[in-house]
Image: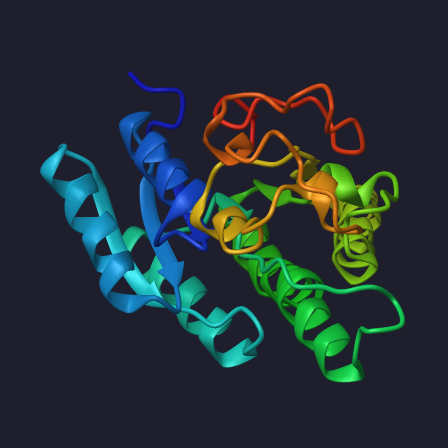
Length: 239
């Protein structure tokens, strides 16, 4: 019997990267998984992969900034599987610039996905989990949500820091409902999202000098020279 046998889970950002692996692992451990994303074909591909491996999964289009999409995902969990036990708020975007170069539109976009999305999902999941007798909410934050770093965009750090504190508030307010809420704070992980923002090595972004670790993105760990970023395993981080 798997560790999640009989559990029903919603995973956002499940079409690729961390979310896809989370969906596969949850299903392997016995959970019934609702894979959610805005990348419909990729999400359906992950669903098919899970099913081919013997798991139980469905796909639901979900834009985390839209409350009606959240309600549909929760309704699907309850109508198809009878309950909702787990929510993994994994969806997020990595955008950013210096504070002076960050527009209001960019700020609002990052906050809408990374922070508002977690709030909307949590708000919709709590009543369903209460009906199920309890549950677990897992919010994927970031090491950037714990401390500021020169090369981490301020808007991204702010969005993930908000997730961290929101997680604490959720845990305190809903412990009596037997709903646990925890946040995970991984360092950089080798996913398509990271690849989209790492065309240049991190230690060369703020100046013209070329970093001699031009191939750093293919490595499993950060070179010690790139000391402004955490020495975290890209492929082995818990996120």
